[in-house]
Length: 207
DNA sequence: TGATTGATGAGCT
DNA sequence: GCTCATCAATCAG
Image: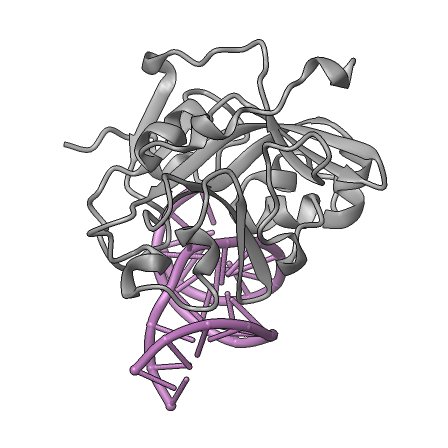
């Protein structure tokens, strides 16, 4: 696979509403370099966290030392820890509009052995089907906070790929595991993709 | 197989 | 002290 054909998405891509970016980023490639060796994966599930009126967003209470990166330029990583795990977000919108996109699940493409090593498991589905799991598989921790994913020299990049996901193949549901704003449909995933987390919870239609 | 719970650490008040 | 955008082990049926 010729990696040089994958160009990082431009910063303008992220300089928009997090709901829009959350859907458009589905199917794009997430590349993580470990000592120059790329781990390639496809983004298959995301959640949007809004810049205003979203009590579930970390930025809701205002700017703190932890959330400072959210208030800056779009196209940078926001990594935070939760219990023993980490979650990877991408900052969207402009300065002082602290929206972001949480990467909830990825489909492994290349670098399977490295991911299995970091996760200490052989089960393919269990490798990256959740925000904490994928960070473990990609060896992402707090030191990966504030990385520019639009730069060709970054350790984490998000790039174009051949596959376009059509609107009808994007499903939306409420976000997972939050206690506030439970009814907003801000989780998005690629229909019928087997690496999406918590598939069974939403297999039945809800009226 | 679905629901519940305990491990666990950082950030905020 | 309490909260929390998680996960894996455990238990009930």
